[in-house]
Length: 115
Image (cartoon, rainbow, N blue to C red):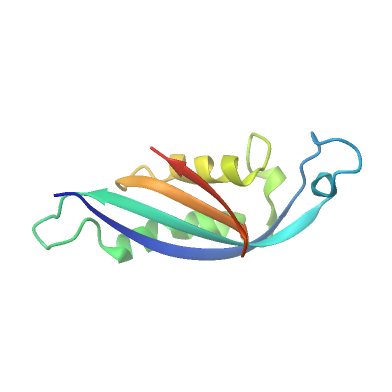
């Protein structure tokens, strides 16, 4: 069997998308209340876990600390779209069996990155 667990995190951050055309509102510096959900998949270990939720929290803490109340344009080496942010977060989580990362910029929008 394959199991999947997930844990949500939130942080506040600003960004801009200067590569967009003049007049596009996202070209301007603006902020989001981001919600990131990290999904880990695999078999159960001897404890009955895919991964301990505490391990997901520990792995995400330095990432959230780096992003929270910051300008993401100063951190990511690429355009700071939700898609790229999700991919960047996924690449940072090397110690977990991450299968998917969802990034919500708003209550109505979500970008999903899957392995």
